Every structure is written in C-alpha cells, then in structure tokens.
Image (tube, rainbow, N blue to C red):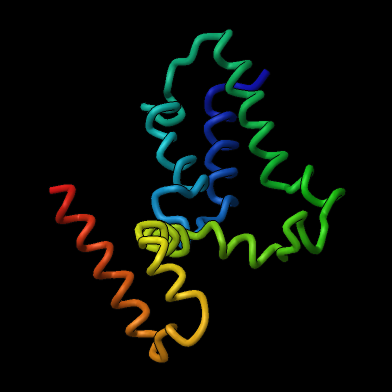
Length: 145
C-alpha cells in the first residue's frame, strides 16, 4: 500500500496527463478531477488519511490511471459507432455548443421546425434561420419570467 504523499503525487500526475476538453465547459471530467484535489488532499502531501481509506483511494487512482492510458478503449476501437458517426462527429455532437443549439431547436413549435426543415418555405439566409430560433428562445425566457 502506498503512502499519502505517493498517492498525492500519483493523483497529480493523472490530473496533469488528463486533457481538458474546452467544448464541454462545466462538464469536463479533467476539470472535475482537478476540482477534487482540495477535497481529497486538503493539506496536500501532509493530509492524514485513515488506513481503510488509503486502500480505496489507491484503487481509485489505479482506475483513473487505467482510463487515462486508454486501456479499455484501444482493444475495441472502432472507426464508427452504431449510429454510423465517426469519433470526431460523436465528440462534436456532445459538445456544449451543440447541446445548446439542440435546446433552442427543441423550443421551436412543430410548424416552425417544419418550415426550417422542408421545402420552399425554408429561409434562404441562415441568419434568418438563426433569428427565428433566437426569437423563439427569447419568447420562452419571457414566459418563464
């Protein structure tokens, strides 16, 4: 079993190696790991941790190290998913900006979605498209206030 100072250094190493995904502001796991440092080690290497907690913390850090090394990802890596999207397309689809856009689109009425999706009614200018979405989103905010 490792000492607290060794666990602290290993945890910091995992945090440093874990990249931060800027497309997931407020939802990124790397950011979450960094925010846990003061909670897990309030006095850095000098933190007193009970013996039974040391073992669970060591197991937790080992799990993070395995995840960080992509131990589970590499043997089963696929170029596309069941949805047919590539890895980059999947990352883009769960980005914060895309999720905000989906929330705005969800607020549109069925008729407005049909107008934006099909046929000759579709706006020719994308800015008009976006203006309609923004207007609907603003109207919803006003109703909720």
